[in-house]
Image 1 (cartoon, rainbow, N blue to C red):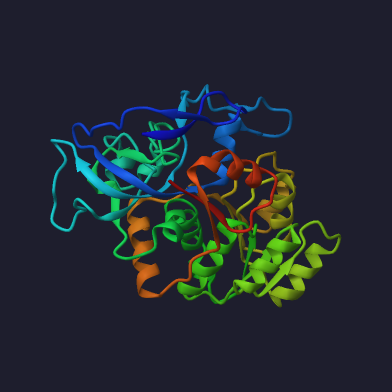
Image 2: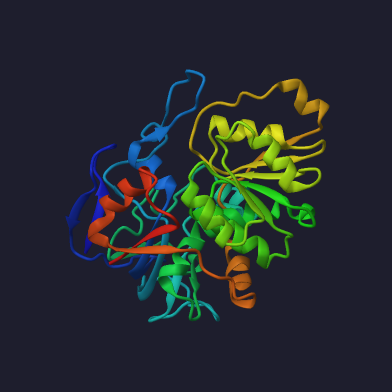
Length: 354
């Protein structure tokens, strides 16, 4: 089995060849067909997050990320073998199925996990984060319930649904009550383009997109955005107000840095909600009295749960949701994909294809 591992933070991924593992217990072995390259992978690769305001950098090593580790949490694969204790449930995956691997796995025992919110578990065992993921030609999945049959969806374009798809879907659901009005989305990368396609399928009026990259703003317009604003423009706030044509009550920040969260905060009308998804890093600079005076809600949104992922795939099928632009790359170019993502060269999602 060939894989590309983070051997040291901030160092190139290391190519490793080992014997293909056999599944034990409830595990399932899949042959990887596609593995998306996510911005979160950059943070794992770099080893932490910038918390801003001079705070100590959030170290992933101190939070239980042990190296060497194979990244990749947006994975589609062909089911090859089941462990001896893996349950074969009616409607579950079987040998030969092409399935999306749900990666946000918890301990399975705590209140969050038992209520179906494994992504909120405090003892996570996420694929490609806490244990080996999809930057490989084979991958082990802990239990068949985390494998969702794609039923004919293309593996390469479907792989991002495991993260950018369910992440934006979950965030959109948090502002669904405001879908009759334009919402504002910060970031027109893979997540932003995904959000635009899902918003349309979910019945939303549309979104105004903010991004400092002209190419990405153009991609957002092509994907159906109501308008696109350069977040670095001195009159960005005025442009947003003009395009909205009324109160801005819902903003989703898919970037999550100091500049985007400040502009997002400033553009909200009374009673508005800011949902922060992005993990770019930094510290907030909001005027605290305005949170109360404008009765604002500031909410974080972290990926999505297994039920939402199933709901998302059903939406994609029934509404014929158009896939976001993807850039297929051979697995051997994993380092190239990460570097191009870090340098902002990618429009859409890079997907590794072993």
